[in-house]
Image (cartoon, rainbow, N blue to C red):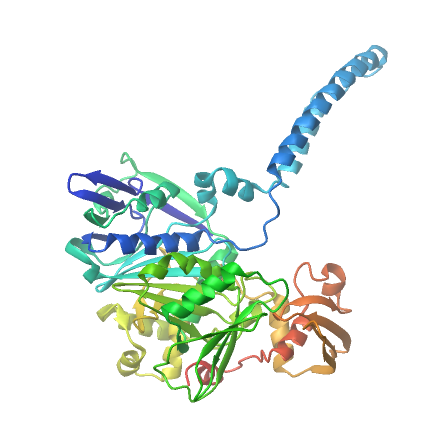
Length: 561
């Protein structure tokens, strides 16, 4: 999907006699959004916006060893050898031409060299090279322009990580600004560059700092206006889908666990000093009635006690979260953190870490696994409400936000004459389409269009066909388990029969399929390279009790009751 943006100028930080001025350039292809005010605590804002930047560039996917120096040496050696070959080739070619009967067709060698270059260009890892050597050019390949929302009570800054597994939302109360003026409510993209991040680090508490979402570009909207520049950002399908799925997950009610600043520090410090060499590599949250809540770091079984919980847990809670290395982006916020909270839905499902810093709050949303790919997509897709709501119903729910852009679920139930289950499903659907965001710290739903035009389900893309088929097999209970064995190393060996096929899988402590065998055409052709087949996914789904939610009532009972 292509996203067109148009800016009047680059975002910048200028220094004047009265202090620093942060001027963010909004996207002129969207509705007018502006804001002007003075920051009361620029130091905390600097650290919070820096953490948001760390989320944007976060990419914890496997990275091969840097062999650029060795490869440069090889290139030089190949060039030296090629020069020797060319001299020998030219000498031999001259001898052959003296005895050649028919000349070589014109342009044949040129065409061969052209096609050869085209072939090798497709094999270059262009994005990885730019990330190492040209950050500004890499920025054009990665959609890192943050989404800024000016609301009546807060300012929201949203971003999504490069590895499509982390989402950050920084909310700043309007009370954190003084002398507000030229305020226009709405949502827009703002120009963001690596130099702007470096300028953010120059913010100091002893200098007055003003913050501006520059509205001047909206006064000159002709295509020939000087000083404007446009960009087209190619949004990867996985990036857009992952962003919206986390939004959808955030629109659901979750269990709240108070973490505390001390416990968060202990978690980050322990993970920085220790490196797990075997599975499972998860954080286990345990909250039982009458007992102290705690976090357990696997595989060391290191227990970290949590502060007393304000909510009484009538039911025991035991949830495992993977991809914990992504929490290191919160390290720079520890000195200014007042409190920390964790919102969870279940094992392998997205988790949300809320850091409160006075008038600011940072929400870090993490997908179930760092690698947000085919092995875990089925768990995240089950968060969507299994119901086809009519356009009239969605329009009716969206109209409730016209009177007030922020609404609570209880207030929506009083305003809209329909069942709460349909309102909940509608909010979930609007969040999946990027039109509604759930502000977890404020416990309110806010109207916010993340894209200039409303998205469609075709643009987001559906589940992988194998994943869809696996969910149907689990729902129909067509799996017969013949072997379920756990080894001393923690691996789980499962064998069974599905649709008359003998299926076997080895599942590690993190719930990943490491090896498998099946006789279906998908597995015969691709093995696990293109993801496990429907039968292996169904076998794993039966292990994790990933039963399909086949009705909106059961979905509502699962998440809202």
